[in-house]
Amino acid sequence: MSEGCVRVDRSAAFAVNGVGSREGTLPFPLSFSVSSAGGVFDVVAAAASASELVDLLAAYARGQAVVLNVGTNSWLNDDYGQLPLGRIAGEQGVAAQVHDIRWAATRYWSDDLLVMPWAELPRFLDGWYPYDIEILDVAGTLTAAEVAELALAVNTRAPDAPLLPTVAGANLWFGGHDDCYLNLETASADLVSLLLARLLALRAGTALLIDGDLAAEDVVVPQPPVALAAALLAVSSAWVGRVAQVRAGAVELALAPVDVRWRTGNQLPGDMPYTLTLDLPSGRWSQHVTGAIR
Image (cartoon, rainbow, N blue to C red; front, side, top):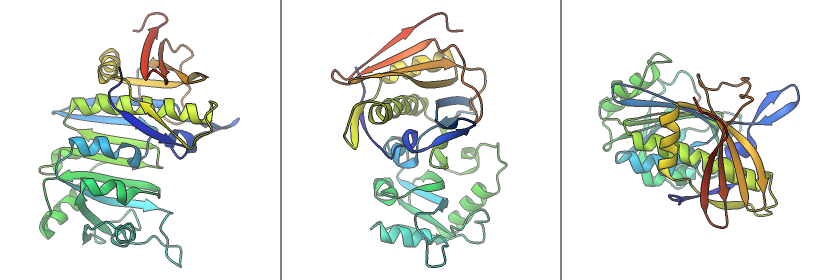
């Protein structure tokens, strides 16, 4: 049986984003890879936006969310410059602590760092699209000195260096890019499996809306069992997947383990031996292996 459901609409990352090619724009494959060191799991995956995952992040996060390094074309002033994050929060009706970090924000127009309850994050993200965003968890509100330490830790780290060990008390970091690529650092193995299950559900739901015969603007899709996602990760730490077939009320996803994580421009394997099928009316996922998985 499934473990929880997710509502997927036509603005889902799998629906609106594509990979450029000589043939045009191709749908994003599902991609997922995880590594671990020092008790921290590092996930690189596609395709999902922060708004599609915020409930999962909140369930494993500490009490307050820190939002910084946001880039967006959704909130612009009369000179086509990005509005400050504090202004965006106000327009969204979200009460947040606003800290000016323009001295540390060298990569973005965004000069603010926000601290808010995780319960406010869905409202903050509703209806707009950040092409870059970073979100961390902290136990509570931050002092000015703590904000300075955090901003320095985030914005001066080496590109491939883990962030969590450098931020006191944080156990979750999310980085989103182009509203489809995501990075996650977490201390929870359970969240890693849940994230893979969510991506599978998002891929299936998007296929039903875009490639199927559904006329609705959204569809509620059951997530596959977390145990199924965990079993996949026990086989391989890196996977790619695509839609194999869409029938009335059903989707087949073809998956393959890979030696290295997928990058834009990489070809998918010709042999994708693992099939997951969602039967929407019954809410059940089934799995089938055609051939040997290494």
